[in-house]
Image (cartoon, rainbow, N blue to C red; front, side, top):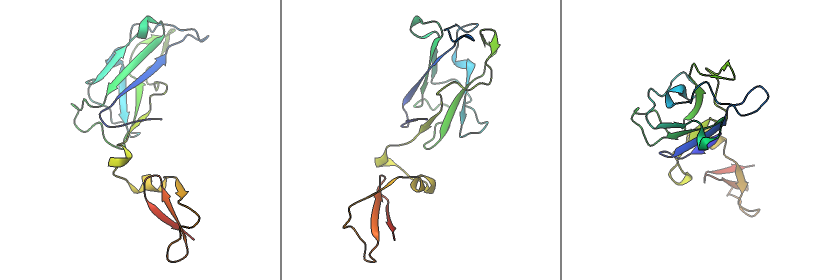
Length: 159
């Protein structure tokens, strides 16, 4: 899964191929309206195509396409949120090699929006999953326990 900061643009490249794996064009070029973006594993979809640009074909290459998603375009108020995950799927009647692609997830399209560590507001689940590392062998608290600091700066102790 890709991780981006709020208000960044993410670029999702994908290919369309025939059954043998050779590049092939879809029944017609893709447009922003051919895709849906889902949020947090739910049926919640971005209600408009504002901020979404599709180039199909990309670089004049048959079967090579790009979706550009500008998360600074928040005209759909509140859709782009910190710590939310998103996935892009085909929402189209177009076909590839005569086969419907409607409802399929665009390959490598899952991404998460996360602020930088310096500005991060943490949820308990984020702290629990953080990796820990030892400060040094001589760092012990008053109870004689080793002190650890994870990469997010949270201090924990271990017996």
